[in-house]
Image (cartoon, rainbow, N blue to C red):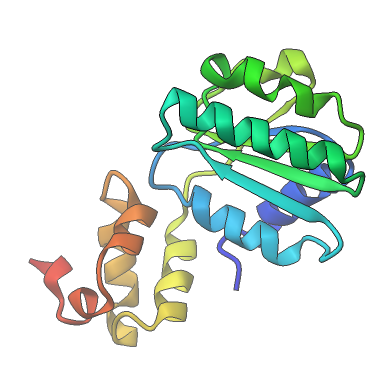
Length: 181
């Protein structure tokens, strides 16, 4: 079950058409889940290289980029390079070589626009998570009794980062009704 099937299918279509995308969403709206869902619908023949830049120091991400581009130059097979927690200004020079490879499509994932449209990137904003999507996710995860699904979704919608809150809490925490306090 996908969190946002229509949106995820649109993203996949852009990427499969070899269009670079900067995926934008504030914290807590399900960026990681969108990537998980995206990977589940992309063809198995597509190579996916995922680099999460969140906790990397400058020398670490330079090494990661260098290793990734070395691999990308060796393989001439269609490849999706995902750069998660991307900061366009900070990482721009490091990722430029990938944009020159015809067999590579780049997906950057960030909390804001990164100025990548000048390099041919499409800015695509993940829509804010909806109550109905949260209800479906709560039901799918079987977190609470059916009579509490809508109430929990309402509570989650009041949180600053609804999807992150859903991810970070243990299943038992929801079942015990801690969120009702």
